[in-house]
Image (cartoon, rainbow, N blue to C red; front, side, top):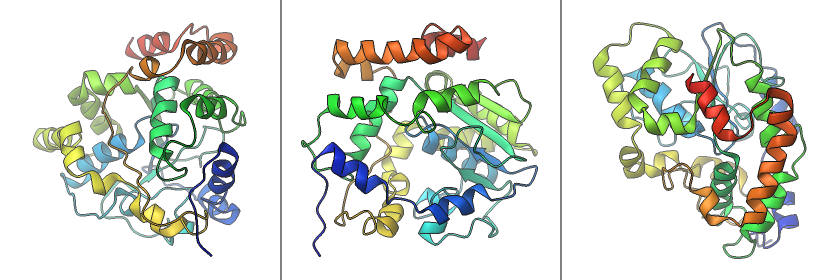
Length: 295
């Protein structure tokens, strides 16, 4: 049977439902963390791969000896369906996992790094990530995709994830950043991550990890961050043809989303923010969240 890339939103959603299996997700959720395990847990397209590169550089002294970063930092919810044993030894300490889980779902007992990002930027980044992988380029409009992003199940959407982690931001085992802060002061972010994961990490290792987490460096090594191993393992199950594109190193910029969407979309995102983050936390906008984190 010949696989074809989706050309409608409904087809895309059906295809995405097969990216992981219930068994695979269940095995990830059942993992029992050790006290030094690190979970990198932003919402999708909110700086996850960037933070993986920082943490891996710090724990290995800058090793780039991997075909795809998923090999050395397993994706908790997808690992089993990729044939990766999450209990297997890792290449360096501490053990590190990637996930997109809300606080309520993530396995407890480890340490957690979360990155917040402007929801419009996250949506636009996700659209570009899926285009050419989960849907044929040009067949789903950005406005349609924005409606899908806004309409996701509250247990899986951006705002439910953000609220769950915002409630926990004062915990000693949670370290929270804004994507924009990573852009503004990457060396400072690397220093804070180094202190959080523990161990004597010398200044030269921190400097190397910072350099290797720069946009230019990651763009030059783009294939190591592009999910090609995820595609190889799961495209057939999703009914997708081989050879899709899924780069995670795009523009390396913050705040561009609002410039490419309509005022109607911006208004809908602002209203959702008011219904959730403003209503519970008094944060009038995403910029308020960034300022609160910086303070």
